Image (cartoon, rainbow, N blue to C red; front, side, top):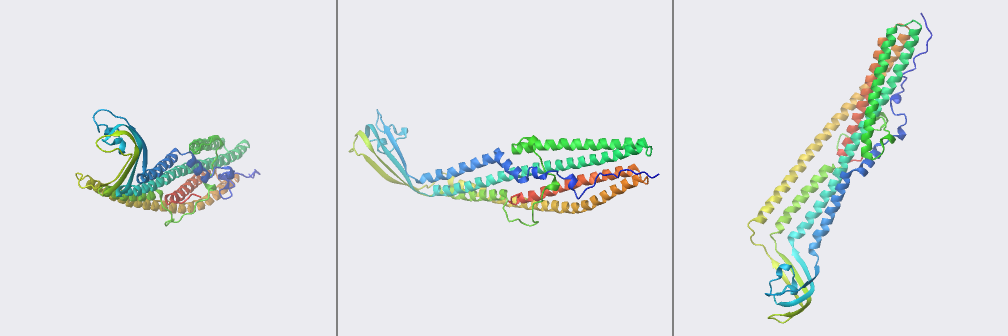
Length: 425
């Protein structure tokens, strides 16, 4: 029996257009996601504040070589010279003073090798703090990237599931038409209806996963989830990346290198405590009267301190600093090894994904042809509904796998760029 029926109009895919985003231009881009995540990250703000604190430490260390000036006043009674614990210095703190006194006191460090080394160590500490800012940025970017790809994957799977629902409903419509004319068994209508229900269930599940993923994106961006939309992985241009070095510097490596240099500087700080230092002090003021000696309204002097023995304290401080520096250097080498291993793993993932995508493209083309043939044979009563249903399921499986592999490929490419200190755009 020949029957003129409407040809099935479902699953006429052109490339992967029907399972990709309908309006990719309105979706949140990866660069927008990363920018928003950096703006809202408290970890990144905390790292920036610590860098500012380290920057202030340099000025504090340099202040040790600047003169100090203070206004001091004292009034004492009883045994002369017994009020030095008040912290009064200069002529106001002299044991020859009697009665009230007030004046200015200035101190200046002329030579102190330990403090000079401390300035250099503080500068290296600042570089380490600035490197920590980049580490925090790297961690935020990596988390934002993972969240973005997860949401994009869910979007692509939801769109593919929606297309399968449309395709299955198209099949069901034609089966119902055949059943009504008595050309097909009612069992086939029940079977295809069950497949439509299964497709709708998958769409609902992927839709729920996509909404949950948007909630995670909302946490990172500070934008309402209801206003967010993500592109499918098929709409994201893969970032360019080489299997060799990208020429950048990993933030973790930069921080470890800065910490190693800071540890080296601490050795000189410890060694400087065994070196001499020269200081100067001066004061000017007025006192009511003096004892034993004639009263003067000024005082000054130079001092030399040369440490000779402090119970091996300085020696052990130097040994401790050297051990810490050696540990930092080994940490740097170990971290470099980990980065190289991660690069190799990303290269492996990228290469495997590229091979899979090539095969899946071929499978996708075959799956489309198989579905068209199964539909045609079913219309001409030379094929069964089982063939159509299996062709639908096969196409759905390949589409879902294609989206998963594409998302994994994008994630590996972008993660490798971040790992090597490269921007995502």
